[in-house]
Image 1: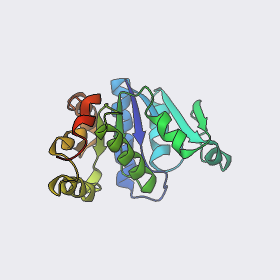
Image 2: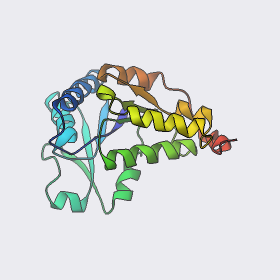
Image 3: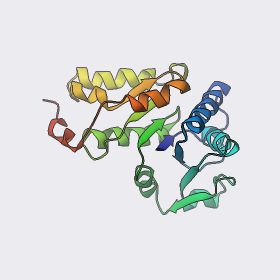
Image 4: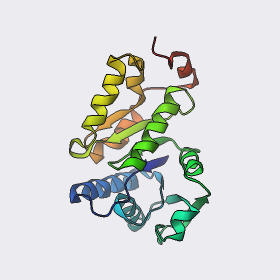
Amino acid sequence: MKICVYCASSPIVNKKYFDATEKLGKEFLKSGAEIVFGGGAHGLMGKLADTVIAGGGKIKGIMPKFMDEVEWGHKGVSDFVYTDTMHERKAKFMEDVDALVALPGGSGTLEELLEAITLKRLGLFVKPIVILNTDGYYNPLITMLERCVSENFMNEKHLQMWKFVNLPEEVMPAISNSAEWDEGAINFALSK
């Protein structure tokens, strides 16, 4: 199984996010999953890579060349793809993966996650999306997505496009138990 992980590059976030990332990395190692991530050496990206590499797992970084030029790339990751733009990077994240997992993060993580949800709504991406809600970090997003449905901006069926979990140990089971989704989702993409 190949899993793309969206996560933060900030090295100054609370330790609880680093701890959850390390636990999740160990869960990935137990499952034998191959990881695709943003390629960064710092923040939760760095912690994820360090954990997977230390455990002998497979991890692939995808990073725009301009980020690598300022040495954001993780030196321990040997499998790297470099893109010209952020748009190309996001497209590469979704190529041939079996699931997407979002950890807490800032605007970049949110942008990647919401683009994936939009593509799933249109039936252009049909794999599981799991969001690790460490210490309630994503509670405001849960509220906003539910409001999108209650205010008829989205269909109630769209609530099946993702799963929020609270603990790293819940991520792999959530991937396995995600609702089936297919290209036909475009037929109810409009909230009617």
